Length: 168
Image (tube, rainbow, N blue to C red):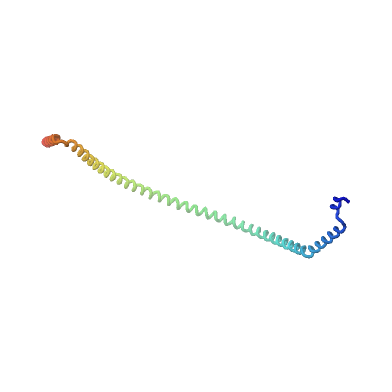
């Protein structure tokens, strides 16, 4: 036999021990593992069937709840329509009342604003007059200082004022 052929085809002794090892493995699995596996499969099957029964029960309850929900929804819609109608009436009344109050308040505020504007206008006019008077005094003072810087101009100014006083 060639080397390759001897590697590919096993000897009788190797085959015998492989069969014996496989038989021992099958025996151990049959004795210890298969009962556990079949038991867990049975439990799983029982669990799934109980879950299916529970799902059917829940579906029936859900159908009942959907009917109750539809009924409650219809009642709620009717109640909502009634509440909205009442709220609309109250809202219109409140709007009319608020509109009347707002009109009265607006008229009062306009009157107050007119009074305030007149007062501020008079105050501003008084302030402007006072400011003009103060500026006139300052300007007059500066002009007089410049005009009265020498003695001769002072005397001429006094004489002109005296003449003006005599004429009036």
